[in-house]
Image 1 (cartoon, rainbow, N blue to C red):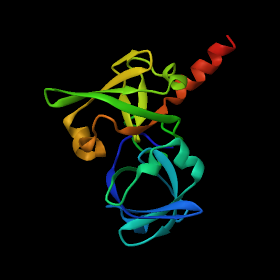
Image 2: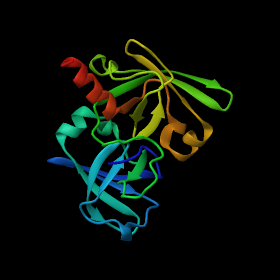
Image 3: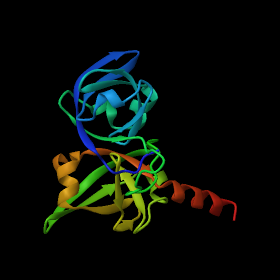
Length: 195
C-alpha cells in the first residue's frame, strides 16, 4: 500500500526486453535499506525489486502491466515518480493507493492559473463513473484531488510544490498517465450495484 505522496524522482537508466521488460531505475533512496522483493510504486505502478546496486534497483515488468499502463513508453532518462511502500505508523498524507493501475488517462489541456496549473484529462469511459468532484485519484502515482468532472473529462490543479518534486513539471498535452481510481469509490459503486 502507498499514499500517493511522491518521495523521489528516479530515472530510467536501462531497459531490456527479454520475456518480461526489465527496467533499471536510479534513485536517491538508500538502497541499503531496500530488500529484494520490496514493492516500490514507480509512476504509480507497484513493482517488485529484483536486483539492487549502490544507487539503483531493477524491476521486471510483465506484458500484462505494460498493456494496462504507460510503462511501455518509458525510455532511458525518463523521470519516474517513486514512493516506497507504506509502513505501519507512517503519515498518511495522501489517500490509500494500491499501485494497481486501473487504466490510462490522457492529458487534454493544461492552463496556468497563478503558480498552479489546471490539468484536464480524458479517462477511459468505464472508469469515469468512479471519479467524483473533491474525490481522490492517483495519477502517475501522485495523490490528487479532483476539481471537476464532466462525463469522462476531469480536472485537477497542480501546485508549484507538486510540479517541483514529481515528474509533473515535465507533463504536456497528449501525455498518457497511469490512473488508479480511489479504492473507496470502487467499493461504493460496487455496493450501489446491489443496493
